[in-house]
Length: 94
Image 1: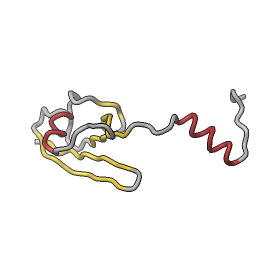
Image 2 (image 1 turned 90 degrees about the vertical axis):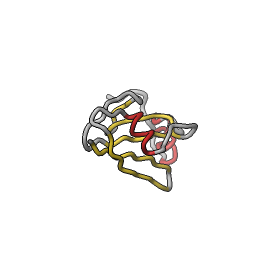
Image 3 (image 1 turned 60 degrees about the vertical axis):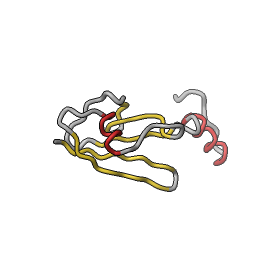
Image 4 (image 1 turned 90 degrees about the horizontal axis):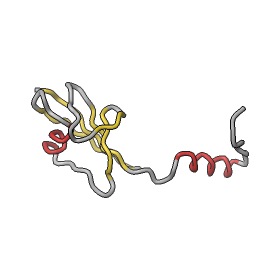
């Protein structure tokens, strides 16, 4: 038996649960045991920040993360922050 943690988060809250699984368990097995699922808001999976699929095999102590979609492209978010602070971003770094 192995124990893994599942985590899902939103802007104002976070939930975590720990499940016990067979030694050859996958991310899909962990989701089934926990009762959690992907949906419209939680659209991706990772194990310790590395992209995963339901078929990804798990090991003792792994952390499965259910991921939300990006609300804004990270580059665009940086541009908006720079505009608000009055800095100008160059197109290319020297």
